[in-house]
Length: 136
Image (cartoon, rainbow, N blue to C red; front, side, top):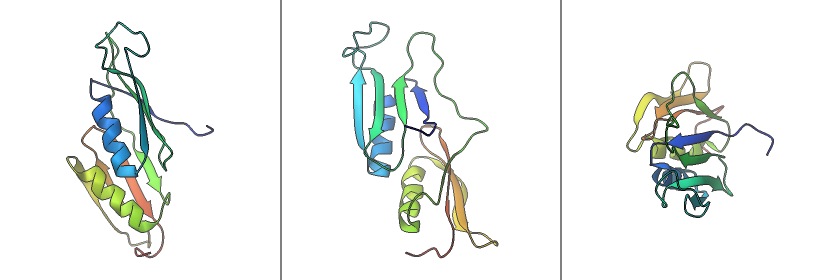
């Protein structure tokens, strides 16, 4: 792994969140529980380590334990600019919007590129866009 990869601590929703992202991005999801890691600082079925595997987006997550702060996103976006075909990026935007909030609709800009922003149901702020024609 050579790129920075987000590692998020969720407030008991890591399993749901990673499963959601796996569905949106078409990735396999690997989940390991506190019980598997012999951790006793939270429920046995809580996620001690999970990640998206074999897909276009890299993301790690776990459930916060004890006094660990849970993930909160302010002043940061995860950019997926030109990272896939336009049709795929549109599908991802739509998927991330489900249960989330569209900040700026995915649309063609005066300079010719298309982009948009969405905050998904788990609080991640995404910037999605592509250059050129909006059809594949």
